[in-house]
Amino acid sequence: MTNDAHACFNLLLSTARSGSIRDALAHYRNPSDAWHALSQSDRSLNHGLKGHGRLIDRGMNWLLQPDCHLIAWHHQDYPESLRHVASPPAFLFIRGRKELLWHRQIGIVGSRQPSASGEECAHYFARRLAGSGYIVASGLARGLDAAAHLGALAAGQTIAALATGPDMAFPRCNQDLYERIVESGAVITEHPPGVPALRSHFPARNRLIAGLSQGTLVIEAAIRSGALITARLAAELGKEVMAVPGSIHNPMAFGCHQLIREGAFLVEQPEEAAHILACSGFTQGAPKKYSAHKAAPKPSEAPSIEHLNEGQRQVWQALGHDSVAIDTICTRTGLTAADISSILVGMELSGWVENQYGRYHRCI
Image 1 (cartoon, rainbow, N blue to C red):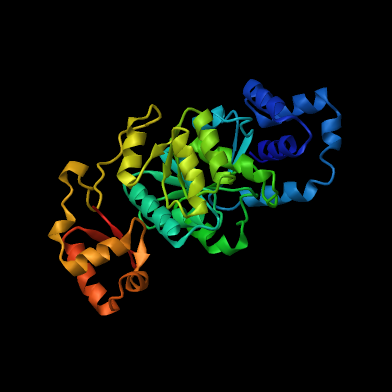
Image 2: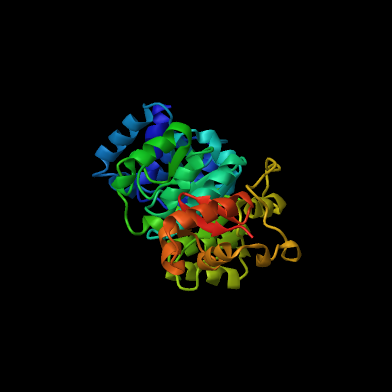
């Protein structure tokens, strides 16, 4: 194993083209033989390894640690879903539970600078979908990626695709989250240990999320964003693309609206995303039966606001169509916080509103 692992690093860090490496691994079924054949046919490959000795040593030491894995293109553990992405990686570095790569997954991506309601939405969708049996895949970035990972960890497992080597978190502020993910889930990257984040690594990282997942869900994204790149890559692979609509006043929702105009599924509840994936041709097994907090009534069944009293109507109008805090409702209605709290409790018990992390939104 040591010789094969060393040969893997030689192949990866040399100047050999990725396609040539994949072909050699598929033909010889052995990294040592593949490296010997390629290096004999092109003597310059050995010279290309100069200066990479420390990276190779770091990688070999990393592999000695528990739950650290190196999977080559020819290996049976290489996820079939990643064989179809553009320029698939010849090698995958995984820390954590590598078997999760074969489970049904959904990618959840979005802005690094989301609104408070956007973060809550990502956490909520990820928690509900992880609870229904999906592995949530995202990119460990600030903002919605982190919120999606945290939501998934609250109810199940998550996988983080990295733009660095597998032994570091980027950004550094997500180090604790990285450690939590590897405890119960996994991180995956095509870069060996010790490789830092580079700008060119992020679009390549996005194709791992799109490739691993049955479908990709976008929550808050600008018109030009990495989340839309992930969505485009998923669409090119024939996978489902879903988007959560947002306020017309929120620039971070414009990318989602653009996706919907281009044919992405508009989803408002996690069970809608689960249903779309269950009906897709990529399902590896029917998802567990999903139960939402409360299914929204059909328009024909929606009760009239005539059933509300004057105070409830004021609060209902003040809520609008986004999640808002009590302070905002106070400003919009002129009512006291005590009065609004009393009104909201009654409306929540009746199923008109729902409280998520201290912010209220309409359920009907």
